[in-house]
Length: 139
Image 1 (cartoon, rainbow, N blue to C red):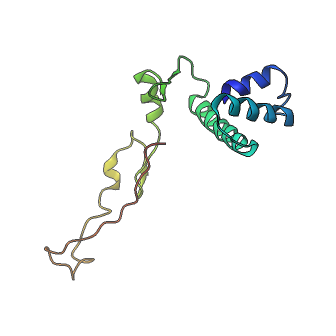
Image 2 (tube, one colour):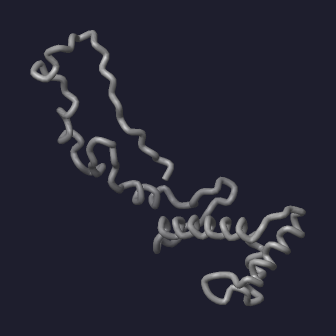
Image 3 (cartoon, one colour):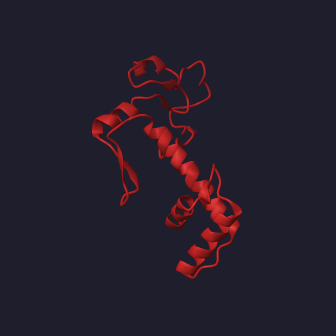
């Protein structure tokens, strides 16, 4: 699809931010002919919009950093360990408290401590259920 889109850009069927009607028609026709599939304009437009959002996210992640690339086989950003360490040094959300890795994590101690005042009716054999939110680390 991207090869066909590039062809349409090169012939002038994307004069600004969007393909022209002729451009979309050509994309659908050329792609469907090359692949023996039957996708409609709306499906190409949805895919284009999705790819554009992914590219914008990638560009935001990369920012103005240099020396980065992409590993097409693994589908990941190719960067040095030092670059990743700098990106990872951000704030970590634990679901209960938020702290930066450079902070003393002991400042949050005591939040889950059982005391006799608050747990008078709980004996030592009682199992307590802890509901911690799941943290999505893939993004």
